[in-house]
Length: 181
Image (cartoon, rainbow, N blue to C red; front, side, top):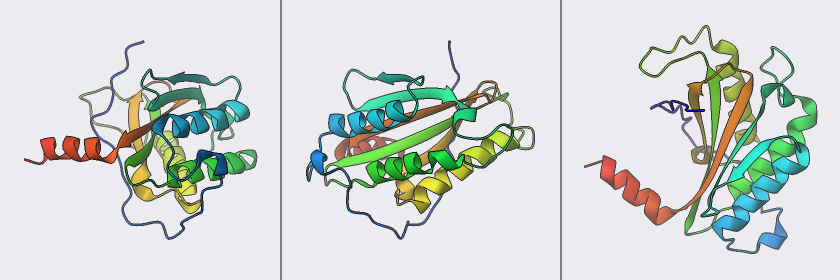
């Protein structure tokens, strides 16, 4: 269906102290964007065969949707213990640094919010708390802070949507310069 995407993103600031050697030796020293996207897709598909995953034609982005209760127990903002390994692996993919590429994982939480309305944080407290918990766990596992963001979209809170992008740092800079004039 047609989703309205939030015009705002929460970001945490500061640096993660942990830097990890890539545990993906088959990626080589300077992986292509498509290889990183494929690695990220493989991690999620292995864990959640039912997840709905699209990889976009340029191979540099993917979108994934799955029920929130596959990561969080019902009604709680605590990660399921059996998902910690997945988060560690996802963090490691986000931590793969190449001179030309910039990785980003965005978690979109679905809430009863509508574009143009003020977001009621209390009514959507569980969804937001879950997103923060997820992001903090990724950062604790070595994902650089700048690679993770949280967004909001309209929905019923029962589904999580993730978007993973691998872009060239040059295009990220150009985008930024367009907005900073």
